[in-house]
Amino acid sequence: MSNNELIKFLPIFLIFFLLITSSYLNYISALYSEADLFKVDLTKGRKTKKMKKLLSVLKNGQLLSATISFWQVLLNLFMSFLITKIISENEKFLNEVWVGKKSLLFLASLIIVLFTEILVRLLATKTFSKRAITNYFLINIAYLLNRLSPFQLIIKPRKRVFVNSEKDVSLFVSNLAAEAILEKKEANLIRAALNLDEMKVRQVLTKWEKVICLEKDISYKELQKAYLNHPFDRYPVINKKKKLVGTFSMKIFSRALIKNKNTVWQEYIDKDFITVRPQEKINKVFEKLQKNYRHLAIVKTNKNILGIITLQDILDTLVGKMRDEKDKIKFLSNSSS
Image (cartoon, rainbow, N blue to C red; front, side, top):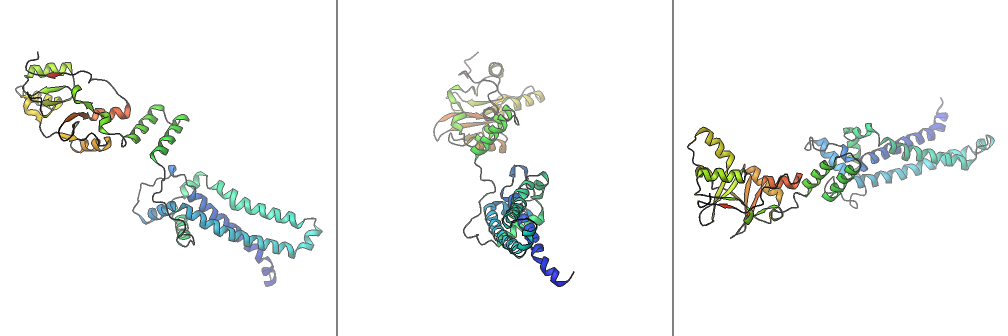
């Protein structure tokens, strides 16, 4: 093929090159700007260079979309110019084969839209494209486009990859339940977990006047009777003046009793009990109980005891109340029988 023939076909080769480039750029835009993040694992290797770049690309999704749209407009305009030039140079031949200039321009525009918009966006929704999101080569191209973008000063990155609020997630869970993807109980459990950091101790606590307490001076038989009537795992312990002196675990005492039948239950009163404020959030109390290996905390202000909160109370907020054991007011003393 002579040089003249090569020069003649050069605009056609250039059009195909621009068409592929424009399609590829739009594929990258669709891949990252409209990524289904519910199907992408962003938890592994967050400190690696690859993951840092991916997170940057996802946070700058709007910038990437605007940048690629800008380059696409330029590429498509250049393609249209080349196509118009080729048609004008061959207008006589086209008239001879009964192909109108306008018809050919329309067909060329249709092909450009089909390849650079419709086809690539369809490909971006396929399963193999979901895996391609973490492809390092594609990440580097998207990252480089953002770094060289002329719109960096105008379009600021998001602070987080996910911009959804807890209400959005709760609504999403409700929709999954409505579509029978999640069972109703599963959806309720997730929604309750989401609301856990919004609930405060005063909403969940058992009021002090309803708490079953043990008096410090009661005998072992009276302790047995108390447990039979109110089979809790843990109890607040008070003295004769009704002042709180500690908490008592029936489980810990039972284990000690198996080893030594002469064990005195008062020796297992835990004076180092946990106290929380009524305005504290449930999730923080849950963390505090776990950290200190406790199941019960005393709720109090500076002067007054308001009640107790247990791990059971917190679990009830998640899965629903399993049983109601705290429905009577009863203080056990030496005078009780």
